[in-house]
Image (cartoon, rainbow over all chains, first blue to last red; front, side):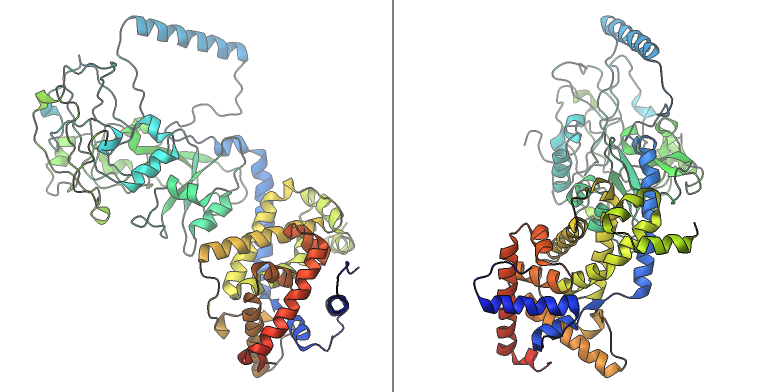
Length: 397
Length: 198
């Protein structure tokens, strides 16, 4: 029993310890006996509550394992169009792919406008599509290239957590311009992308990620939540743009990154036990969207909620609300309520309480193409999280 | 088979048989939980001191067990216990990493109850003071010895199981344990404020 020890004293001590712990024989040694008499004991109610919780979790885990695809295929910006259990025949899929490929080839040969590739920048507009400045919200005037250093994020950068982290470290609000220069060569190497609406800057979750929502309740820590979902706390922090100025607080909605191939364990705050539940898509704000701002796809995320818990009158698809204007501020990760949107942007802008977000920076629109790296006018998106930088970071800096 | 009969049957099963039944019989997990809960809680409570922290970490440990149970592979007697306490050990380590402060003063209200608590309030207080003194003394040991002493006394692990949890040789564990107890003896003698409690 007792391994080889060099000193008989050691053997004697350990043998007495074995007697004490395994047979309950007091050793006569004050220290050992006191140690054995001060064993902590949990509250019975706590033990029973934890037991019930564990059994429920065990049951939920088993059920979740059977439906991993449906619960986890919630890609940001890409709502599910086809339920995973609907199998498309391989031949049909191949035929569709061939048709799409042929269409793309024809499209390219005809020299049509290139498809908008970036998720976070505003859609590219065809130079032929000239718009009247008067038709646009008169909130901004300075065309700003959406370069990372100007405070926004490219699609490539957004793919990586590093990009997000970098943005977290230097939150900047980009000034935006709803009007396009007519002579900007789109698709060329010198291409400059212009936003057509306000893009609140700061931190974005990486695109092409899969996520679920979690409501933070009192007493929860980032570590607890990360542990519960089996994700790295640091990853969770970066993914949700949490920082000293944006701490975790009760009532906050967190995005939980999900491994599309993994199994997601659900919690009562997200999905009631007893899944599968009927899930409905709910469009939520990916960033704080101030009042008066035109809604763009890059500001939104589609999340899936249990039908019984989903807020009513919310948008179910990003397309349904793209281009509309927010009449009131939509906080980050809050559902987009249809009644809080309007098609009349000018009416919003001329309302008695104009949004205090952006400062107009008059600039020559005609110079936009000549000076594609016009300096952005940084302005704090939220007064509580004002950018520490007095001026925008120069591009390339 | 009634639930009562099933329960009686489960009590007689060993760890391996219980683990095999868990996928289709939740009561098997309940039985395993009841067998191990007190030891895990006692170990965690002695490591962290505060009841609230101990409860949080214990819940974290068992939640982790539930989530990863499907991946656990039984490798002989004691392997589940070793795996369980490995999780608990990691959770405590992680807790201290987050806390960044290892030793914090404890108030009596924050301390956990003690097994076999005396009926009189004065005796309960005395027990808790004794617990606090020993907890403080153990915290002054090296981290490795703290781990070994608490796993042995409060986790109820044998030396060979501790060796698996900590990735050490069994003889090394025995040696550390012996030295740790000697250290504790000497420290308690050198610290009158602790000795007076005995």
